[in-house]
Image (cartoon, rainbow, N blue to C red):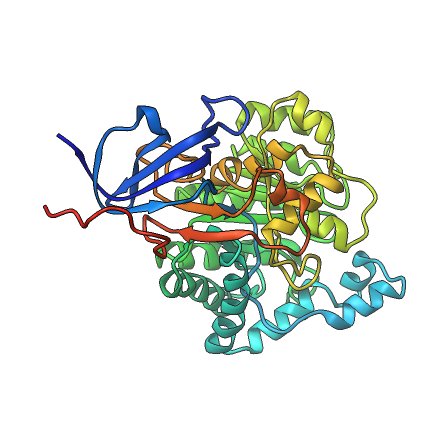
Amino acid sequence: MPEKADRVWRNARLATLARAQPGLGIVEDGVVACRGGRIVYAGPSNAAPHFAAMEAIDCEGRWITPGLVDCHTHLVYGGDRVQEFELRMAGKSYEEIARAGGGIRSTVRATRAASEEALLESAQRRIDALIAEGVTTIEIKSGYGLELEPERKQLRVARQLGNLRPVTVTTTFLGAHALPLEANQDKDAYIARVCEEMLPAVATEGLVDSVDGFCETIAFTPEQIARVFEAARRFNLPVKLHADQLSNSGGAALAAAYRAQSADHLEHTDEEGIAAMAKADTVAVLLPGAFYFLRETRPPPVALIRRHRVPIALASDCNPGTSPLTSLLLAMNMGAILLRLSVDECLAGVTREAAKAVGQEREIGTLEAGKWCDLAIWSIERPAELIYFMGFNPLHARVWRGNSPKLSSTAPAYDP
């Protein structure tokens, strides 16, 4: 008796990224089948059940990977920071610009002033660029409102993007991103508002899936971020952290203490922080776009991260000030060239480990039965091409929850 399937992709080479398989989990002659939007089989054709499928698709030897996951973005914002870019090119540092009222605060002004419709329109252009490269899941942070209503506005727009586009959106509340001008330098009072007013409101309204903070000399101390994380615990929300980007502020260790999903940036993290992340099973999210754009010279401690077997994810960090990047393919190239990651690490970093960084490793990130059928189908001869090329997109087709453009039909419709 043949097994029922909605779609079957045949004559494909697979990079399953399954943890139980070595390397990328390569299958040279592979089949993927889905039913009800979920994978029911992914593996070699000679071991596949006989499927009675509504649609059979000949991939003509193309590669299939899991759909890509961008696990750290600030995609929804108003305005841009082109003028600050010019200042940096003239020699000003990121910290100098931030302390003079630029940086995050300038985007806060523009985001507060923008209508929800304007924010949605500009964010759609950015998310479409990522989708066009095979992204099927994307995390979007708030953090450019820094008061309740504009934070709500950002998160509502993020939710709308997930309704308007065939992509899974996870949302993160980043109220502890920077100190707004009206706070009059009183960080403790502002953190109290984040914990007692903003976070409870957005959590109760179902606008947020996780909570983030910026632990840094120009932002908030570990003690202040710990208060935010305690508030997140009260709403059973997982946490993550912008950690140790500009200095070793103990951010990685703090994230680990709260069993954070991820600690992100990590350029200045020491071995103690990395070891703590390993014990807490916290993902290291590396952001080569910001490293490149800010002309940083100290990369994250990749050797330490490997030594302690901390999972490594990569993300675009799409934002207007430090990583105006809407290409996860280019982020992989930067990860290899600038951070010295291997091909396997880069591909795992935008699939399996990125899924773990957003708490979705049981649902996405590998080609395994039971997971959502999110696929990227590539016109390439070997997976390394996805990292090797710059400014070239070899995506042939993108599948989200089992739905994709038809390539070529080779089987009659299944009649139940």
